[in-house]
Image 1 (cartoon, rainbow, N blue to C red):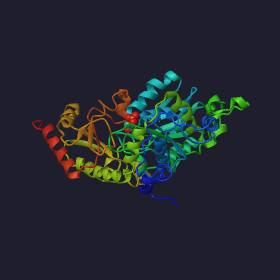
Image 2: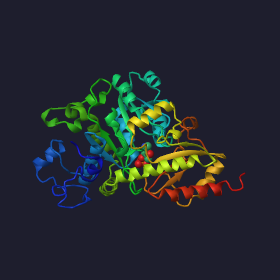
Image 3: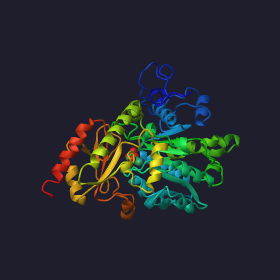
Image 4: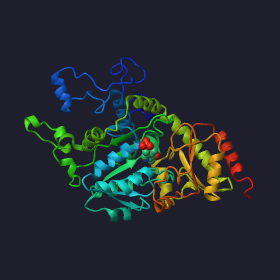
Length: 443
Ligand SMILES: *Cc1c(COP(=O)(O)O)cnc(C)c1O
C-alpha cells in the first residue's frame, strides 16, 4: 500500500544516505555543470541512454528531487519543474497545440493564461475557443474540431473558486482523442489530484500553496503517462527529432518512438525547457522542497480559516456576496447543484485557501477596504502563509478583456483574500475594522 500524503511530502524522491551523503535536508547543488567522468559515459548521458547530470539547464540533482516528489504527490509518472507557473502553463499548452492546433478553455482563468491564449498564442498559429462555463459539456463538445488538441481549465478557478467537472471533461476529451490539461494551483496536490479523475497533464504555479511562504517562484508540469499521443491529433509527437536520435548509426526516432506514453513530458523537457531555458534554480528547488514538506498541515489549517472567514463575511451587511465553493452559500458559479456534487465528490478536504466577495459601493469602497486593512497585506499572490488581499479587476486580472472578466465574475466591486496561517480571530477583527473605516460616514 502506498504511504500517506504527509509522509510522502517529507520523504519522496530523496534517499538521505544514497543521494545526500547523510544530509537531512536536500542539498543545494549550486553547479552549472557536472563531471561526466568518461567519454563513454558522456556519450550515453548525451544520448539520454542513462540518467545523470551534465549541465543544469538539462537536469539538476536538487531540482530532480522536487520533480520526483511532486510527480508522486500528484499521482503522475513524471514531472518537469520550471522557473514559474507561467513557464509551466505556456510550455504545456504550446507543446499540446504546436503546429497550428486549437485549445478549448473557459474565460475564468488566471489573467496571464487568458492573455496568452487570447492575444499571444494566435501569433504562433494557435487559437483558443473560449467558453463561459467549462462545465457546459455540450458546448465544449460542439467546439471540438479536427485541429483541437486539448481542453485546458483550472480545477478550482481563481478568484471565483468554481470547481471544474474534471471527470465529465476527461470522458468527453478522451472520446475525441483530445488531452485534458489542468491547472491545479488553487487546491494544491494536498486537496485534489486531477489525475485520479482522468486528467492527462497537470500544471502548477508552485509559487503558491506548494511552497507556501511567498519566497520563490516556480512551476511544474506533471504527466499522468497514459494518454495516447499517437492517436493522429499530435503530429509533433511522431516526427523524427535529431535531439533524441542517434544520427551516426542512422537511427532517427520521434518522441513517441523513444518515450511512448511519456512522450509529452519528454517533449516539454527536451524541446521547451532546453530551448526557452526557463529552468528552476537549485536554490529555488531547495526552498520549494522545504515549503512543501509542511503543505498538508498548512493547507488543512488555511482551509479551516478560509471557511470561518467566508461565513464571517456573510454576516457583514455591506458584503453583497461571497464566492467560496467550500461552503454551500458560497457557490454561485454555473449549475449550483453540480457545484455541490463536485465539492463533495472531488474536494472532500476543502476547495482551497482563496475566497472572494463583492461589496456595496463599488470600486470606491474596494479601495477604502484594501487601504484600511492592517494585518492583511495588499499583494498579488496566493497560497502564502500570510493573509493577502487584492482587487482582482485592477491587479491580477487586469489584462483580461472586460467582457471575459465580467463573465468570470471579476467586477470592480470584487475583493479576493488568500487566507494565511494567522489566528482566525485576528483576521476577522482586521476585516471588521477595515469595513468600519471604509463605510464610516457612508450611510
Ligand atoms: C499564479 C498563478 C499562475 C502563474 O504562476 P507564476 O508562478 O506567477 O508564473 C498560473 N495559474 C494560476 C491559477 C495561478 O494562481
